Amino acid sequence: MPAAVQTLDISPVGRVEGDLDVRVDVQDGVVVNAWTQAELFRGFEVILRNKDPQAGLIVTPRACGICGASHLTCAAWALDTAWGTTVPRNAILARNLGQVVESIQSLPRHHYGLFMIDYTNKNYAKSKYYEEAVKRWAPFTGTNYEIGVTISGRPVEIYALLGGQWPHSSYMVPGGVMCAPTLTDVTRSWGILEHFRRNWIEPIWLGCSLERYEEIKSLDDFKAWLDERPEHANSDLGMFWRMSEDIGLDKYGQGHGRFVSWGYLPHEDKYNKPTIEGRNASLFMKSGVYDSKTDAHQLMDQSFTREDTIRAWYDEPSGKHPFDRTTAPTRKNTVDAEGKYSWATAVRHAQAGRLEAGPLARQLIAGGPHGEEWQHYDPLVLDMFKKLGGASVMLRHFARMHECVKLYRRAEYYLKEFRLNDPWYIKPTERDGRGWGATEAIRGALCHWIEIEGGKIKNYQIIAPTTWNVGPRSDDGVRGPMEEALIGAPIADPSDPVEIGHVCRSYDSCLVCTVHAHDAKTGKELARFRTA
Image (tube, rainbow, N blue to C red; front, side, top):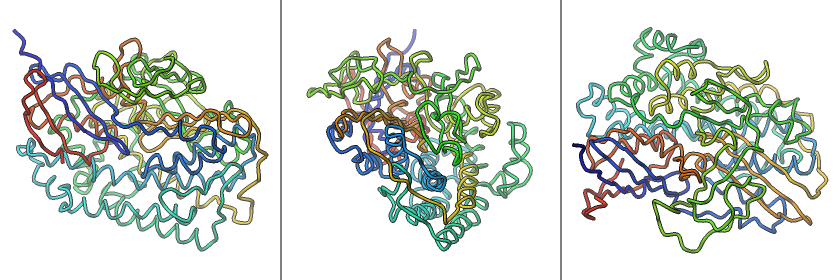
């Protein structure tokens, strides 16, 4: 006879710039049902209504304190497509560089400050890697924790050289950028990159040169690299992989097996006259939808985006494209697991359904045969995905770690490609219309839609990576990506469900939280604890 179902309410698990609550049903030590609840209403869409069209350049970067460049990128390209601007080559390079260096700084901050702390949980004291994990990754006292968190601030020094400050710069504007870097700025930026590489990426993150790591193209290549030298196995990447396998993080966190990326980093010579329709063919990192059930890749078209609101706290028609949404929040937001229970909408693809966003999605799409020949192609993570049996907590985080090298290389490329005496800005002509800007924030697919009427913002809509991933059930009852990924997670200790944290933080959920767990049937508090 199966054991009784135990319900754990974990509040808050947390996410970056907002609170995430999770409810799970546990039976026989395994999660059998899950609900993810976004507890914070931001309301940027409401704030921007009837404002000047360029207000989004100021307001939306404040949506997140760690990825404001991605929001600014979207806001600028949305106005570019609405106004039919011409964007100089230098400006595209400068926009891409700002976003890339901000993404690079996020990697060690998430890895050390949010994710690896869980590896020091007492539940893993029997792991042969536990003592080393505590030595490296314990919060505040871990050797690599201190190094990684400290050095994470270096890349955004380059952003500050472009935008005058970080975070919350608004140097990207329709028609280009409000900066003109000098040779001194470029030289300083090169020095910052080299310091980041020589003092962290190569000796600590990888345990090898960038050039050696770039030779890895398959799971077999990676395993051979891992065994090739002690420096590889004992790097943070090597230690992460070995301990993840040892404590079973390769065994759960699968999800729906369908993934999305908007693609990003427009080519400096192919997107100077940006349009919504012309974007996909102009990106270095290609867009796509990948369905692992059919092993099919296709490009991602914004016209297929839908937002279901039946399970969310909005009083508006469900299943609409963002251009047709009104963002009408309800005043009463009672949690009802069978009804409305989240401020996040259930974002879906009109044909492909619920899709997971994030670094894993980007890397699976990078390995696809679709797109243009000149666009980025990387088969490693897709090969791992197929040979290891699909997604997992381990593979989801590995994809994030793997991105570091290619993002670093793009930063090098953009610095080399500047033509300092060429234009950085071409003044646009304002007009009414619709625009759309998209990119890949470090944690996944991000896009802005804008409609301008009478010289004012009639409608502004944002779909963030977290909306894709932590959205509630869709109108047809299909769980959100994170809800689905929680199914099957083993819970060794209901009073300290660190496994829930692993799954949520593999999507880059925020860790700065206190967690409470109770038995929903008796109301008895099981524990009060910090997941850190």
